[in-house]
Amino acid sequence: MAQIVFIATAFSALGLPLIAMVALMLAKLTTGTAARRAERRFLSILIVMTLVTSHTVMMQNAAWLIHTTTLSLMVVGSLWIPGQKSLNESEDPFFAG
Image 1: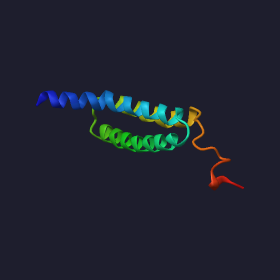
Image 2: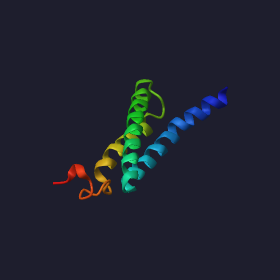
Image 3: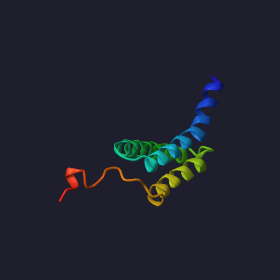
């Protein structure tokens, strides 16, 4: 039972931030219709990371600094890193005219 707790703690402290950073990079580097899916995944992972970070801070867990840093990198990175075009505006009928 102690191994399961250790694995869950290690995944929470290291796995979730890695998944979050990969989602950020995929959201910024993909193009076309895949970019919209990547942005949706990024938004859902951002929401999950926000909830996990708030839980970690409230419970005074040892990984609070890692989670807070990851959350701040996700927010700042989404604004600072230039993204690719998700759709060509001239081909999309919504943006026509």
